[in-house]
Length: 73
Image (cartoon, rainbow, N blue to C red; front, side, top):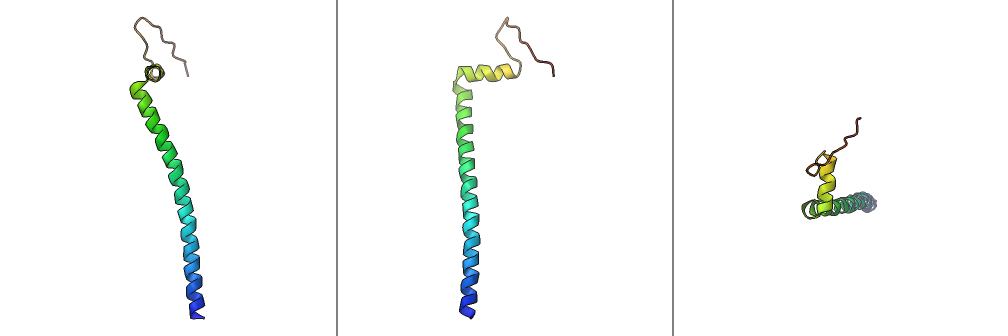
């Protein structure tokens, strides 16, 4: 009976750890994808002139002698 109790406890602990492992793997995959996306965005912000210009326009910057229309909220 003692052996059965020990085996059941070990099995329940193993099951709980397997669930936690799956949750951590899912979170890891999500964060890895987000990290890759952010790395790509950083690369584009450093090297892609169209991305740089788009982001500059978002904060109200423009080329010389260019009129910037800012929407009123």
